[in-house]
Amino acid sequence: MTLFDKIWDAHIVKSIDETRDVIYIDKHLIHEVTSPQAFDGLKSRGIGIFRRDRILATADHNVPTIDQHLPIKDAMGRLQVDKLTQNCLEFGVELYGLGHKYQGIVHVIGPELGLTLPGMTIVCGDSHTSTHGAFGNISFGIGTSQVEQVMATQCLVLERPKTMRINVEGNLSKGVYSKDIILYIISKLTAAGGTGYFIEFAGSTIRSLSMEARMTICNMSIELGARGGMIAPDQTTYEYIKGKRFAPKDKDWENALKYWKTLDSDHDATFDAEYNYNAEDIEPMMTYGTNPGMGMGISEVISIDKFSDSHIKSLQYMGMKIGESMLGKRIQNVFIGSCTNSRIEDLRQVAAYVNGKRKADHVKVYIVPGSKQVEIQAKAEGLDKIFAASGFELREPGCSACLGMNEDKIPAGEYCVSTSNRNFEGRQGQGARTILASPMMAAAAAIAGKIVDVRNYLN
Image (tube, rainbow, N blue to C red; front, side, top):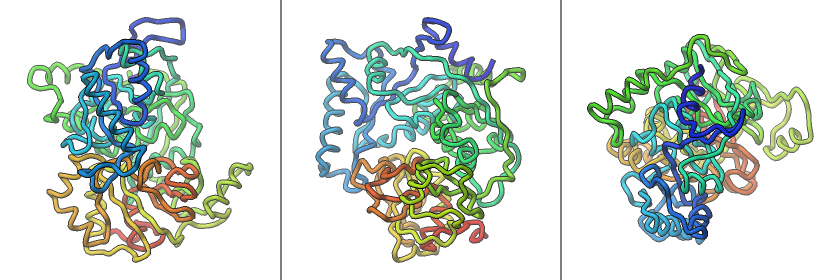
């Protein structure tokens, strides 16, 4: 059996037919944007939440990242956060709202608090729920109607996806990180290459990564069109979880560990599709178009094998040309944050690089921690002082400029080197031009004021 099969089968409440099952959900995470309609649905039917102990709420998507102690200025954001607060109070749901010590991006706080564990099924009304799969579980995003279904029954009727394994072997070159791995894979398979599949990432390169780096890879599995991504748990996983606020303790820990060690794909397991890549072939990556599959290594030039109207439109929107190199392109904004790259490891890497350097005068830089805990840790380590001296603005936790829903938007026509996960047209604001990259490539661009190869600047 594959790792996916083991977890899926352990959560079947009832099989409907050959392709569909009723699946029990272990953990349900909610936020202010996709939950109001679900709560309204429960109210209209006069029913409550079936398992309150299995649901957790936070405010993250449409919240300001400055002056969070003040009333929210944006009318829609204020309404959504107020509704979440009211609904959680009425239904008895635990809420980590603005000002709470555990508030943050939903896919950051789950792992850091020990709520995300191997072998679980986890859902949230957000596509990047796949992030949690880095711990060896089945995690995926759901729609608002499904949010209501989980609230009411703690179950979902689901069609069993196909399985895919992507193996990455070898050692990463200097200046190449997990963000580059996943952007490389998406550039090879395209943004639709994983459609209909649940992906397991495996191989020596994946096993060598930290948990935070693994989360970056699983976070962007959805950008392959996949239902989700996962990585088998190992000693790195166990060490990360141990001691976390809500992680199992004492005898419960021993029992959990015993089970977790059974969670891997059997050596003779077969997958519906399998791909193999060499780490040595991967260099710092950047996107040039308007979907994550339009990416290339920093030493390459823009090249599209098959032209289509959408490709032409994409290049026109981005102000790019066939045969053009990204090196030297002047940029105006850098965003380091989102559920993809806003953890303390990301901030430490950036701080180590920019320490003693100063950003280009024409570049605006936002660094937005993924949670209050990350913000507190960054300040405890003095990273905030390094950022301030470099001209980088450290803000408060939230999704921020990832999705242009809140106040943090990129002006029309300007370029933003972003550590987020999507570069769709208008994603970061109407007319904004998004270039996806690793935190280190983003930091290097902020200092240089243009796109550079970070490998040339590393000691």
